[in-house]
Length: 315
Length: 149
Image 1: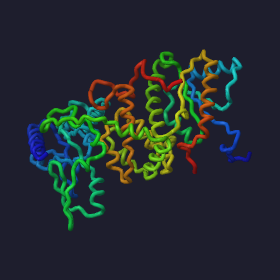
Image 2 (image 1 turned 45 degrees about the horizontal axis):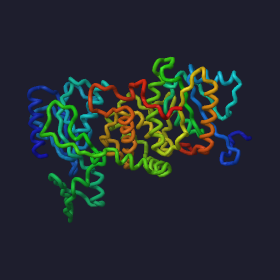
Image 3 (image 1 turned 30 degrees about the vertical axis):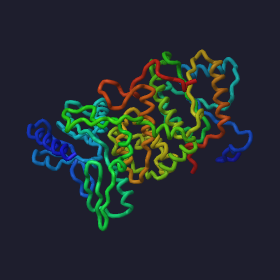
Image 4 (image 1 turned 135 degrees about the horizontal axis):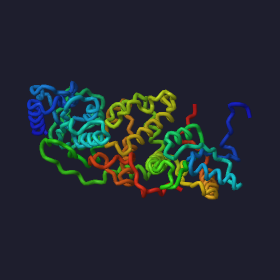
C-alpha cells in the first residue's frame, strides 16, 4: 500500500507536469484519524498530498459529472465500474478523463471502527498490511482489517479496475466466491420477515436524500421525489413513503448500480438497504446476462430489450 | 354509507378491488370484445386505459397499493404486436425487475400481475380476470405499502 501511494504520487506529478490533465481527483488525509477526503490537485508540487490506503472510501467518479477540462481520477475497482457506466450513459467523455487505476483489497468501514471503539475517542490510527492499530487515551488496540471491511467489499469480485489508462502497482487476485450468497440467504426467509426487515430499516430514514445525492448513478437534473408539478411522490417520512422512495430508487439504479456502498456509507441514520441493490444487480445478471460496468459496448439492460427475453411471470 | 366511511374489508363478504392497466390497442380492445360478446367476468376490476403497457410507470402500481387496492393487473399486447413497435418489450424488462424486487421485499406473489391479451382475445380477457380475481381473493386484503394516516 505504501509502495502504491508512492507510485500514485509519482504518476500524478508526471501527469500534471506533462500537462496531460488539468486536475487530478484523489484522496488526501482527513482531519480525523483514519479518515480521508477527496482532493482536487492542479499543481505538480501539491501531489504529495495524495494518499492511498484502505480508508479511501469515496467513490470519486461522482465528481466527474461536474468536473471541467481533462480530469485525472484515482479509481478503485468499483469506481472504475461507475466510470464505465457514466461513459456509457454519456455523462462523461472517455477522452476527457485519465483513469489512474488502483487495485483495491477492500475498504475499511468507519462505522465498524466506531463499533469496535464502543464510544471511546480515537486519537490516532495506524494501518499495516493486515491490521489497524487504534490508539486513544488509555487504550491501544489491534483490529484485523478483514473484520472491518465494508460489507460491499466482502463480496466484491472486481477488485482490479476494469478500465484504466495507467495502473498503480500490480493487479491483485480476484477472490473466487459466490457474490450473491447474502441475497440468496435473504431470499430464503419468509415474506413477513423480509417485509419487517425493510420496514425496520426504512423506518429510520429521515428523507435527507444523502444516499441519492452521493450516488454516482443519480444525476437526473430533477429527481422523481423532487417533482412538484404535480407532487405525485409522497415526501413525508411516513413508513410507506420512505419504503417507496427506496424501492423506486433501486429500480432506477437497477442495471447501473455497481454496489460501491456509497449510499449506506453516507447515511446518517445507518439505513442498510444494500441487499436491495444487490438483488437488482443479481436479477439483471441472471435474466439478461449483463454485468454492470464491465464493458463499454453493451447497452444498459434497462435501455434495451430482446424479443426472447424471459417472461415466465407474464400470464 | 356516509361520506368518508370506508368498507370494512375484514368482514365476511369482502370483495377485492383490483386495478387493471390495459393498453389502448390490445388489452383494452380485448376487454371491449369481452363486453360486446356479453362474456361474464368478476366486477372487481377497475380499468384504467393507458396508451401502451410501456406507459405504466412502476410507481402507478405502487401508488395503487399505497391507496389500498388489493391487486393490480397490467396488460398489454403480445410481444411483436405493440402499436409502438417495442413499448411492451421495454415494459417487460422493467416489470421483470420490478416484480422480482417487489416479491423480494415481501409483497405476496400474485398481488401484482402481468398479462398479454390481444384485441381478439375477449374470451381470454374474461378468463384472466377470473383467475386474477380468484388469486387475489385467496391472498386477502392488501396490506403492504398501504399508507394509513
